[in-house]
Length: 76
Length: 283
Image (cartoon, rainbow over all chains, first blue to last red; front, side, top):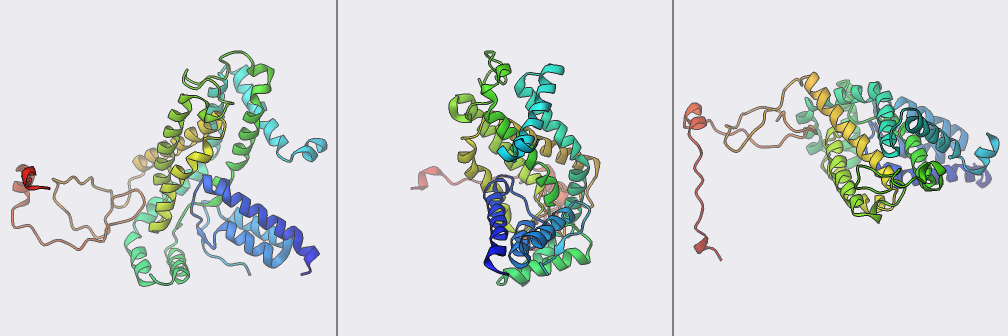
């Protein structure tokens, strides 16, 4: 991926970090998946870019509900 | 709508929160502070199906605490491997190891909406009436910073207590570091929260108390597989395999004791004598 395409993805990574430092820290919780949803989002954005990475992160968030089993689920 | 989005992406959220708060204040007749409490209760009621399921799975998790501790011991040096093995164990036993992010994240828009709405609250003509923003006569304005009045400090103390209690009910992790972090966080963040409007802290306290109440009710309605027994210093120790007690599934790793020489009934009846050293001998 070239730098121009990476820039928006890194901006989104920054937003995830902002979330982690603010709301994530204020409402501490443990994620049922490994890596955790925010870590997964960072990895997905870095590996697949804004759109595909963002979609993967959103899909993971939807899966991280009380009815799912959780577990080891790395970015592929 | 588009110009609202362009000015601030969170403006529609703020408007939605104001709309609900206005309805609670003007139509239902609640004071502003109680409208925030009511709004929080409404949000938490909507999230009940999600959180109840979560609490049930945490209770289920407590049954597996000894095996999980065993895995943790086995891979003490390799954190990554330890996590992977734990996750595998969860999957094999069809259990949910921890909280899900979705219910927690569902509260994010409400939190942000309230934050922005309270930030601009004092400017509203409806809030200009003296005493209209007061809460229980000890917080003069829910739109002002928490630390502007002594009542705010009381609210902060209540917040820390409620946050600790809610963490206790919502955390099923056996990881000592994670548990410690969850317990230390509210104390650290109290300095950040002190800069927030008192109404936001009120929202926080309400949502935490709801979590605690929900945890207590669910525990009472659904008995655990191994109900915890309250132990006092006088009650006899029992050799239960997985500890049973505690809200977070952690069981103490104490070896089973030898059977007592004294009959149990006699031990229970006779109060234990505690010998104290004389203070004079101490330095």
